[in-house]
Length: 217
Image 1 (cartoon, one colour):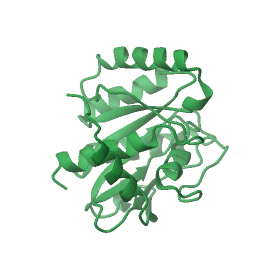
Image 2 (spheres, one colour; image 1 turned 120 degrees about the vertical axis):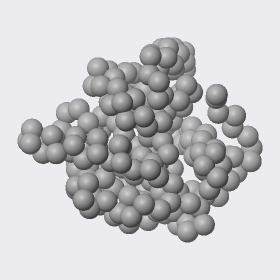
Image 3 (cartoon, helix red, strand yellow; image 1 turned 90 degrees about the vertical axis):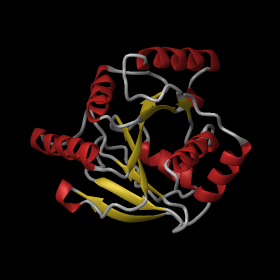
Image 4 (spheres, helix red, strand yellow; image 1 turned 180 degrees about the vertical axis):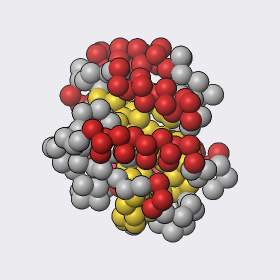
């Protein structure tokens, strides 16, 4: 099955993300997660791949999610709620890979992420952000295996597309699709985005509208 994005999905996505989005919760441990309610989509990726920038671009708010040039700055699961009638919640996950933190702290983040993935029935999809300039790395593939094991649906989003030549980006999309054939929980379509130019944001919003429709929300 592949996403069929329609003008209706695009428009509904625009309206949803033009609404009031706000921070609601930060969870440093699995015991401190907010109560389950709205459908959740989470954003994962290597440290400094641009998760916070993507969330800000999606919602049209420059400072909704904190951005930092220090890898590993996001140390908790950060939850954002949208309009009360929208039925959607965004989750900014701690970056994986290099982080300016102790091994003990990195291990605790890893445990938190794994526990969250396996025990959150409202989690509909994880968007795994990959730097469009570099493509999938070994550390990304490890995360994909974790998602496969947890049986959590995920989709790859190539970021920083404005910094890659069109032909190179197209080749990277195809290479990523080929790699995903080995991963049972992966959604087959690959999205490309740029937080700086806004490219791909309407399609990503529309993909979330599709999820809401599929879950009957």
